[in-house]
Image 1: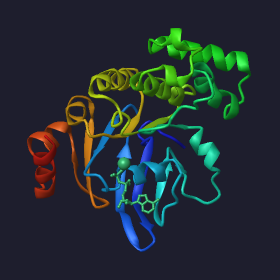
Image 2 (image 1 turned 60 degrees about the vertical axis):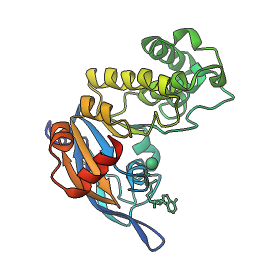
Image 3 (image 1 turned 180 degrees about the vertical axis):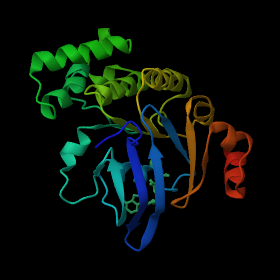
Length: 247
Ligand code: ADP
Ligand code: MG
């Protein structure tokens, strides 16, 4: 039974190895409903791998991951059923280039959720309008700026009201002047109650928008806390060293 206090996501002592190399070493974290949790850490610290294990794109070697009450690392679980509940946006290549913006947004609604074309497209257009891109519905992705494309990718990820949104460095490939519009949309999602786990290099954003910040180093959570705790008063020398480099 899912009670109001059951976290949306619970990662419990997850280990992930590539060959002999441990990339996640006993990761445990929770994301509560409507919470925005931000993963920070150097390149190679395991942020993307962690997000991929949650979306079942990488199997774990040990530990469990719960989406609500369901252990999604159970081999009986169907990955598509999990992915239907989790929206994902990556750094690159989110949109299908040969499909219109609207068709991109409507695709999962049709394929995963079985909606008919008209219903899926009506919902897609509603979302595009909400993010200020209703007039781009008929365009192909390469006619849009990188920032617009990432906003469309976010619209696609939220189209079916996922329980959890995973965002992996969604602004890292963008020109600096396009970062703001994408992060503003994430802030809007937070205001409207989305539950988000995201990796980012945007420390200013993490500080202003995160409910909790989790610092990873070499596959271990070194420190986690509120933005104030992590940015104003980090306890661990590794956190201080990382922040001194990136701030
Ligand atoms: P981050 O997202 O924090 O930069 P990653 O999760 O991408 O870190 O990578 C963590 C470590 O895992 C790195 O050492 C990386 O080289 C390694 N790694 C990631 N994906 C693979 C893979 N498919 N095969 C082997 N090693 C991988
Ligand atoms: Mg990464």
